[in-house]
Image 1 (cartoon, rainbow, N blue to C red):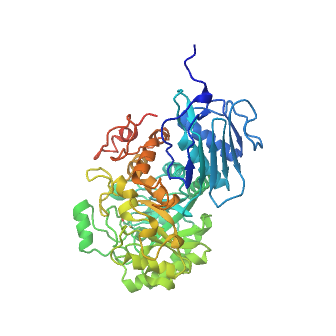
Image 2: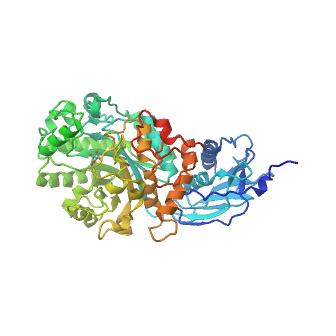
Image 3: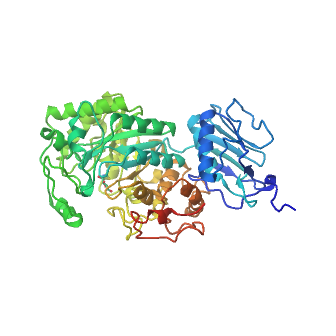
Length: 551
Ligand code: TNX
């Protein structure tokens, strides 16, 4: 007698690992949808290709072999095997989708192409091993839509340069968590990372170095366009940043006449004492980790010719609606000069037709910002030092806010005091702490209507490789995704740490199949095969061990 149960009776015992939590999910139980090499995928061709690739990654099943799914099928199976149908119906809010799964069929309907893409990401997360030994999708009814329009991750490619392949890998990872914006921090004291035809010396002279004397690098325009296209294929926009008027020491290597002399103060000397490196010198590459010592000349016309050149060309290269002008930590710029600069720079960016974004400091000038300028808040979950007041300045100018609270979702903070990677200026941030906040309760007067979204920045002083990025970002990036996409804390039974921890644990096999070197942080019930929580692990030499959870 054949001991293998009929696939029609396979069921799944594990809880579905959907992250970020969907707006609504019902799990009727019973038999699962059996996923086999004969499962057809029908409907939208782009979406079918995405689904096939994801299913192959997760299960090793190559549905291409048995599938007939490239035609204009809208009603499911054309053969005897249960089918997956993917389509777009134009109904519902942007980026929303509905997913039905039963033993007989799976249907994912997106309101638009992005919604269908997100429904497929959910489908990929639902795949689990059945009690029959095969793969399946549990019976489920999901109706899902994002809480916020903007859900981002930022990668600093200035402190350490990260090549196109690493950026694409980050796009894969972020899109799987329904993030839709990749903010690239393209310039800082340590280097300029984007080739510009209007200012070629920036990459010719100011891109070769990085923090710690590591090699630098830059994106050619073709590289950048490739990143933008890859992001678009994953329903992500690229939000490029040239940081000004501080964080501009690299400019002194190319156009030395544009900058003031570096301002070396006690704070800077303290960082040099703690982290090593030399004090900055005008026209000499800087490879330390201090911030706030450089400044463009504020009352010089040549500065605004430069600002106009670089943002005009950046706008031409960037199809997305936003350009980020920086504006953080301009400690080397006197306050009145800083105000003058951000007012003019936001107007220059707005004149390109794009919406400016600036770090929250720029909100100090309030209505003098270009109308609609977006503010990015990087203070703590409980604001200090008037950072909330500055952030409200953007609202006064008609702009919305992106929340990046550093003591929750700065992915470059250490997750454990002994961790090899990361910084600690915003504290040691556990997975629990990354989850313990709600966007609408951070700043008085900034609620859902004033919030554009949520972004998790990863500054790269200590992150040299994709493995470093994974080790720092995962699992805490999932907290940011849930804050940006899911219903507010308190508005859904799924929005608790316990639920989140269980769902994240359930993603371990998917993340492993995607090659993500996540850190199995404590407090999350990782599958038994996961390595023990490993504070202090040296990710550079032990990258495999940090993420090696067999599927
Ligand atoms: C602060 S927060 C910075 C960056 C550093 C980061 C390190 C903000 C807008 N700027 O210049 O890289 O801390 O965590």
